[in-house]
Image 1 (cartoon, rainbow, N blue to C red):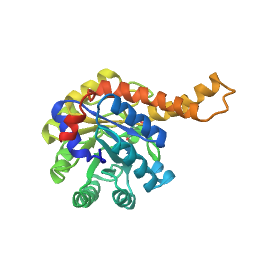
Image 2: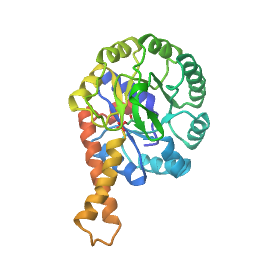
Image 3: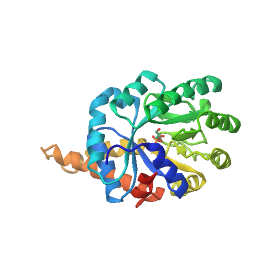
Image 4: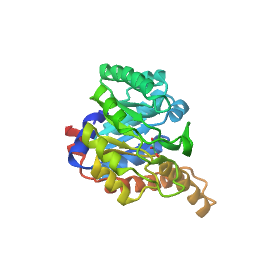
Length: 291
Ligand code: 13P
């Protein structure tokens, strides 16, 4: 299928009570592993890219890898830009064919976040591209984005409502509800009441950031309350390295690169498949594509 727009997929997911896996890609092999998992399980997929990864590979190579794999897949695949604070990068992604972008104004005071998010909302609406925007401050480390524990801040309910009223066609809304990027050091304290109130009042599909390390029960509870997009990055990065390193340790004399690529692929794919099953999106490709 051609690259899919994210907004209709997430509206379907929210309506039908499942969530779409949104994995941060690393390279071509990593996208291949995600798409293979989605195809095997007949599931919709969001391939998302951090700004650091965009800068590493360039816009056109990433767009061409994801587009080619999506076109050969019988399931909808969206190409999304994760946490971006730079409008120039957002514009370049749109020009290169991304189907959605995230503007992250969460480090700014609310009024400033709202003003800039609204400008980018107008830009994305005009370009026919989906927008994700964040309120509050999600803790932890996500590539270049570092929010120390004491700077993490739950979203304010009233601000969430005004934000979503100002941008009624957001593809997905990301309020900080207590999850964090990277590995959890202790038990995450998720504010389910806030999530439920925001999801019910705004009707928006909600993004769950900081997926690595959450339990099956936590995922299911969040999805049941309105999360329609679940972000996973750290686990994918760890498996990318582990797939390679484990084979090097087990077969130190292997003088061939392709088995390493295959081992990485299989390790990453197995995790994507497990998450798709947990998120309830297996068999939902047609539901998500219908919008
Ligand atoms: P993790 O790295 O904790 O999986 O979080 C990913 C994420 O939320 C990307 O925006």
